[in-house]
Amino acid sequence: MAFKPFDLTGKVALVTGGNGGIGLGMAEGLAAAGAKVAIWGQNPEKNAKAEAVLKGYGVDVLVQKVDVADEAAIVAGVAEVIEKLGRLDFCAANAGIGGGAPFDEMTTEKWRRVTTVNLDAVFWTFREAVKHMIERSEAGDPGGSLVATSSTSAIHGAPRNEAYASTKGAVLSLVRGLAVEYARHGIRANSILPGWIATDMTAGLQAWDKFNERAIGRVPMRRWGEGEDFSGIAVYLASDASKFHTGDSFVIDGGYTIF
Image (cartoon, rainbow, N blue to C red):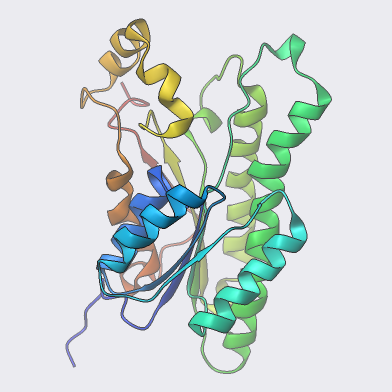
């Protein structure tokens, strides 16, 4: 049989925050390549719409209402993916929230909320995925791919958004550690750093003319990023095409960071 590096037939993927934006873009790419896909989201209407879109690719789809701020919910959610879809090959920790506020007015409660959703949830999700992948490896079926959605805020100044940026910087270090620790099991770990992307989180900025002029006007590609811009990188990182690629950080920002 000819080698098909981007064929995901037989693979199972989980995308947290997969009912819209970057997450749905990733999930669509994975489904189009043949993977069975599980997505997590808390909005029933968005979940239903995403499910319909993904089922249009003719693959098995599992939609779960999981609160990523709840460790027990994450443990149960990953277990359900494995039980209902048979395995877990690709795990994208993509769910996240913003934390915009002047730093001197940031409350501890808000800081903890952002770090719980954007960092603790990544830890819990990857921990459960890795347990399964190691078990498979020890049974003679090595491999797996972990992907964390970071942000360009992790590598440049993010005024009024220090809580968010801190979590996004932290996941870069987490991913590099995982890449080294679990390489012997064939498990890869990588990060994606989106730039200015049109999602629910950036809705206010999208409607702000001055921001569009000064920030988006600086993007060499002269536009906001879209969820579909992340479908290709998801397929690459889930597929055998990236089986020797680990510990890396992929900046996807239309050239904003280098300009």
